[in-house]
Image (cartoon, rainbow, N blue to C red; front, side, top):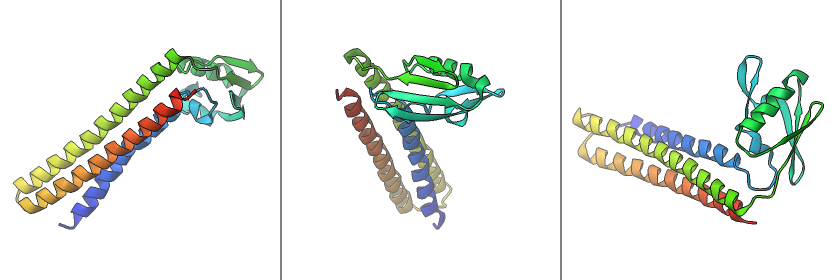
Length: 187
């Protein structure tokens, strides 16, 4: 069956999407060091729409424990401050004109443990997404066999391919989580 190869590539692409979302979410978790990516999940109410912070301001890291946000439009300074405060990142903006400075405080042990729990929650959501892709793919294979469009042997081979892709996706998620957990807990 010619399009089965295409199907497995599509399945892998969809599973990779879960990893991409997890990577973005994990990059938003504060580890005690300043990172411009820390503000990636922040959405600002601007021009009647929700916009990512990086579309209304320049985010830079002038010092290891400082993030600088230079808001392009003076009228958006207050909405950007509000979005940062409401983002639950635990950051307090200090505003000077159109520049907002965010000092990154040291993380205490309790906060580190909270962040690890959040990272685990993000990873579990990603694993569930991968499993949903697997379930959908297996349903398609079962239907193809039931409709006599593929043989039992093809069904078994495709099932094996789907399981290998699932295992690889889950493994990638686990590696990302382990790396982030180490980064958070390293003092």
